Length: 217
Ligand SMILES: [Ca+2]
Ligand SMILES: [Ca+2]
Image (cartoon, rainbow, N blue to C red; front, side, top):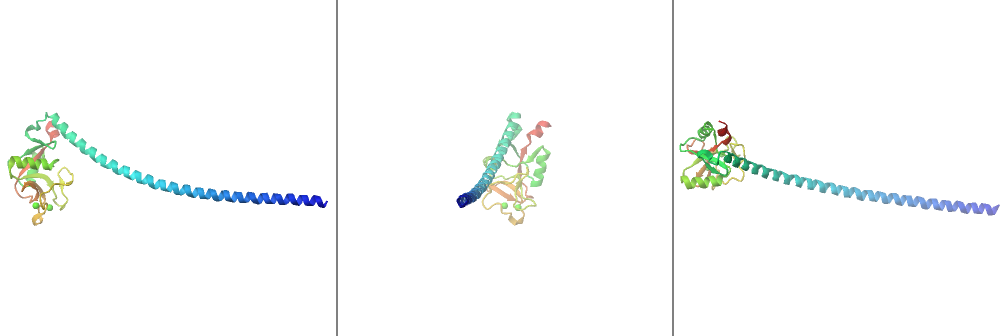
């Protein structure tokens, strides 16, 4: 009888020992899984940050590319318009894919703007200012011309009549200086450069030919 109890005790002790080992293994397994989850979480977090950085860089690049494409299309659009009218520019001069007309009369800037419009043209928003300046100097010497740039009512925020901003505009030395607190209109060829001048001055002016309007009329 005593022998049987001894055997039962031994079996019981072995079972308890095995159960403790199993519990320890389970505990180790849980710790390992928690550690693994933590590593995975930090890796995914780093990947999220990197993906956001790459997405942001890609969108910036697309914006720049988009702007360049728009400029190219605008140039092609103007070029195609002149092909449509046989490249003649109908008596004007093609500079920077624009058909420009240079007046003989002298008017204030506002009167010049109205004069251009009444002839189905616009006071010119210059696509290639440097090329226009070179042309004026070569053909007209020191004669000045109004163009369609202004900062009227919005000092030092220059824009063209077609709504485009002045982007890296090649102003002449120390210009625009808003001399006397009231120079708000763009003049071409003041001392062989671009200047902000008094809008009430009278100068010759440059009209931009509106090909579409002319073809439609
Ligand atoms: Ca001004
Ligand atoms: Ca000035």
